[in-house]
Length: 161
Image 1 (spheres, rainbow, N blue to C red):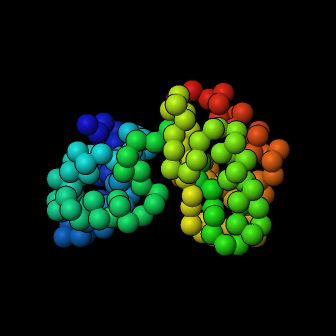
Image 2: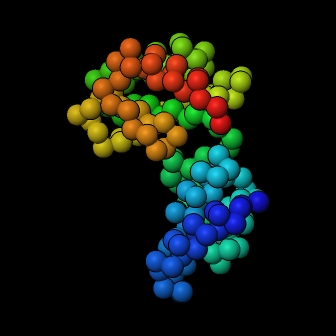
């Protein structure tokens, strides 16, 4: 399932830890697999567990505990809106509604074309930049006015996978 390039990245993570502590690389391994595949299927988690040498249930526990891991398919662009209290009070609720209206979906839904998934997120550590959102777990967007949200959606619609 995973490519040789992905395994090379996982090997670099494993090299950071003593041989008897390979499980310490599980979070980074999951992240590399998710970047490659878009989400973490039970088979992918089993593959990582086998490769690292840890129980599959332990890998699944990590993947289901942290919300940055996608344990079901998501759209090409996953937009996570911070709805924690500081952001919610500083425009997060408005930002989320703007995206819902623009895409015609609610939180935890994916557009029919598979391009967008919208999710609520916990604190992203940027309360002073509210409202904030994260695109595909890697791109932080701050001070998201209606105009900036519209521009972001237009930009993402123009991108192909």
